[in-house]
Length: 388
Image (cartoon, rainbow, N blue to C red):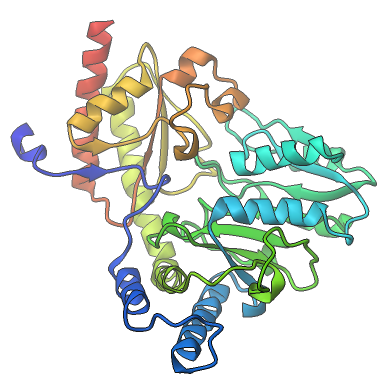
């Protein structure tokens, strides 16, 4: 395929930011946007049909993480899930301790919520990670105090793709009688999740990261865990999250969860093969490039690259002209000019951090897509280096 033929197609490689909604989710939503438009609280057939569909989606989602359907609460997405988990826990009368343990590479939804809680009297310990972005279980153990009420550690990082030792931290938290929350936004449907095995009490997910719609997500709350609601009103979601249910979004998320989680292992193996092939080609064909994050503990679809003497933002813009979409880091902070806190946490200086890009594959990414992306990546890196 020559360059003219290559430019006739778009190659989307920013799936950690958002994914294309799968057809099953689109189809499921359409019916509840149009014909089945009833409010789930209505005492008539239209309302009943919406309520039934919502509960079916709840059951479907619960099965994907080995939870009970009564433990799944619908929210607007990962940010709200993190806020409800942290603020709801710390403001609950159940918690005798007001100390939170978290990591330096958490999503801003966690770190900024921790900052908010600290300003209101909570103690917060932010633990460092190693150069690969991995948190030490021993560091968590040493940080525990008699006043520790919550540990919050993301399952996998949204920038560098490093997977954390969640099962070991969960075992420690359970032994110490401390609630454990994990932000699973990047990990859900990328790797298998069993909340019982992991010993997590709270787990947040966002639908648009696994081929569902934007504006909907869920929070798993282990039975018996008490949280203070953050949105008050009509008492929907058993009083945990008031507001008329986003029925089309919930249906779309349920359909996306059903199909994507069923394909999780197979897609993961396929993505990993493409990922490793891309990494090998990049290492062989582009000098002055470092792969950030852990190779052993890594999401199957994530590649994070740091280039010497390159402006990552400019590289993203040039690749965009080549019809290839990649990112410089977290989509939630892409418009900020600050250096990524994740890259700073793993020891990158500002120049190295600004020379970084993130590539994230999808279930639809092909080996041909990968080859084309590497071709243009090399071309644009060479161009920028000649310009400098």
